[in-house]
Amino acid sequence: MFENLFRMDGKVAVVTGAGNGLGRSFALGLAAFGATVICADRNFEGADETVSLAKQSRGRAEAVRVDVAEEQSVDDMWKEIEANHRRVDILINNAGIATNPVRTHEFSVADWDTLMAINLRGVFLTTKKALALMLPGPGSIINIASIAGLRGYWPGFPALPVNYSAAKAGVVGFTRQVAAEYAKEGIRSNAIAPGWHGGTALGAARRAARPPEDIARFEKAIHDRIPMGHRGKPDDLVGLAVYLASDASHYLTGQVIAHDGGWDAVVA
Image 1 (cartoon, rainbow, N blue to C red):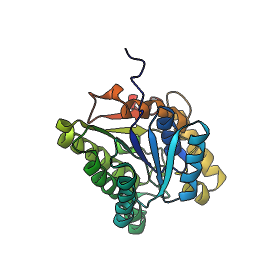
Image 2: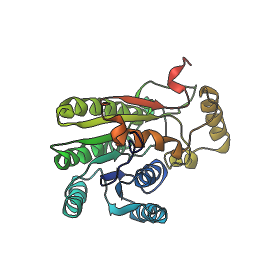
Image 3: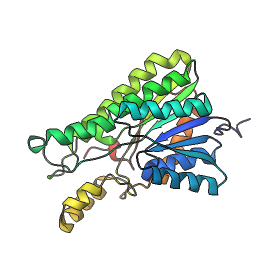
Image 4: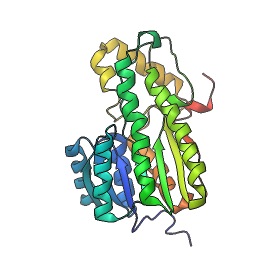
C-alpha cells in the first residue's frame, strides 16, 4: 500500500542552484526517486556535471542556464521547460549566495542589493513562472530558507550577514503566502530552514576574507551551539526534500521545517 509513497515517476522537477552543494544533492535525490530533474544554475558547467552524476545512477536529468536575479533569464528558462515538458510538478528554490558578514552599521548597500536580488527576488521570479505551469495543480514548491531567517545569532562577532537573515525571513513569509493562495488547487508551498551545513559554497567569501584564527573561532562557536555537536552535510537534507516533493506530504503546506541538528530547539 505504501511502497510507492515517495516515488516521483513521471513528474518534472526544477532545482535552482543545482550546480553544487545543496542543489546538487536535491537534484540527485529527486532523480533517484524517479523525477525528471531540470538542473538550473548560472554555472552551467556545474549543472551539467550534476546531470552526468544523475545519469550515472540511471536518473533522468538535463541542465539549463539561469540567473534567477534576471527576469529575462528566468523567462527564457521557463520557455525552454514549457517547450520541452509542457508542465512542472516540483520546484526547489535553492539558488542563493552569502556575503561577508559585518555588523549592520558597517554593511554596504551594494552587498544588501546583490544578495536580495538572488535570495529573495529570485525566489519570487522563479515561483511566479512555475505557478503558471503548475496550475491547475497539483504541485509542490520547496523554498530553501534558513535558521538565519528564524532568529538572530550573535556569538560576540559577526557570524551572519544581516542581508542573508532578512532575505531568508522574507522567504518564510513568501512561502506561507503562496501556500495560502494556492492550497485549493493542490499546490503546496513549504520551506526547509537548514542550519549550518558544510559542503556548500556559501562560506567561500568568509573563508577568503578572514585569517585562519577567525575561521577557527567561528567553527568552534557554531559547533558548541549545535546540540548534535557537528555541521550537517548536503546529503542529510535529501530525505526531507524527497518527502516534501512527493505525495507522501500531500496534506502538508505552509510549513517551515528547521533541519539544524537541534539548533532551533534550545535556548542559547
